[in-house]
Length: 166
Image 1: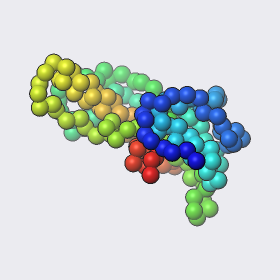
Image 2: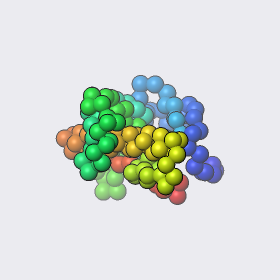
Image 3: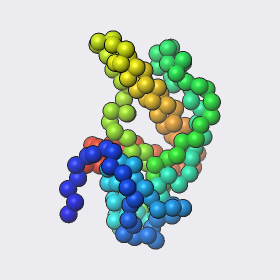
Image 4: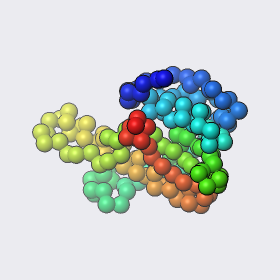
């Protein structure tokens, strides 16, 4: 049995145990141990009918999300971008109903607004600004994906180390 320790930057090719369940166009290549853990779950879970890794994209506009500080406007480009959703999963739930989920895998640290540094060194401020830009981009992607899922009758979840390494 594999012991799971969250190492975010483990990368490689996933060897499918149940290739008939996988509908992606290419062999899945995980970019983190978080993604690897979820691939193993999808591949081996008897309730999962089919799944794919980064099977398609959702167009989104990178703009300042509501309730963000005004200065974030300088970080966004207002242009359309492609968001490759991490996972598309179809499964049978406990009530025997077919459900479709779009799943994003992210570390907890990228799921919340970064804190302004106490010491305003050039390096600390640069890290903060870059983290805020990434967080704003994620919020734009996730809000667009929620709308997409509502239209399609899918559900959207963002999983992190708390959900994957239990």
